[in-house]
Image (tube, rainbow, N blue to C red; front, side):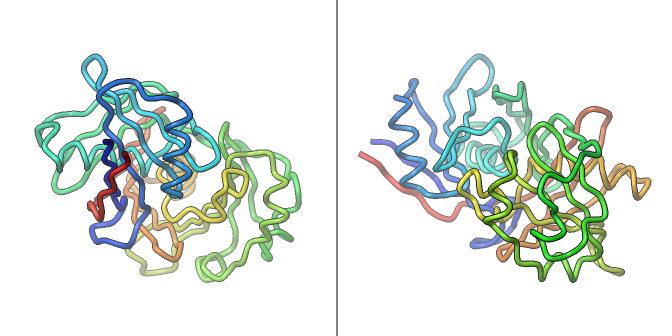
Length: 262
């Protein structure tokens, strides 16, 4: 019997933010079984935790593939370990992943993840993002995972309807679309994230995208501490602090359900 806990990440309330399933293993699991579970859960990511050394081996699987870096499922994993009493609330958690060692800690009601910064560098536009997104692209860049596209304003970003047929042709994990926040907003920048090649037409809140967004907007706005809002239907806030070649990602999470597999 295996139990999976579904956690909504980057939100303080159920049915918002980005849901991830978390499975704590007692021993290494069969690869095909893990892939089948990820397909069955049909969430953006299912996280598998295996106790190791002084922390946990952490893997993230989508219904289509295994990914190299995932923020919301890491946040969900940390919340699960503290919430269910597997680790003391004051402890720092250590996750061994495809992207190296990641840590998590709690402070002032927030979970803070320490991730590698993945700044985007200016790059040629591979398809004509302006046509695919229905609005001019002011800047196009990419990092090892995604393309980053800045557009004109928040209202346009919230209203855009992406051409999934065009975006799926882009050889990348995903496309981050971003703009400065509207005047007077409680956040500094907004974004949306499309990953049709990963089987995710639009991801609700993408922590790993903020490893590119935080350095980009920190350079443009002249501040290293910023708040991003991902303007999907569910929506969620990601606090960010740029620290050299690392980015701290802050957010909240809540357990919403549990599932058992025989």
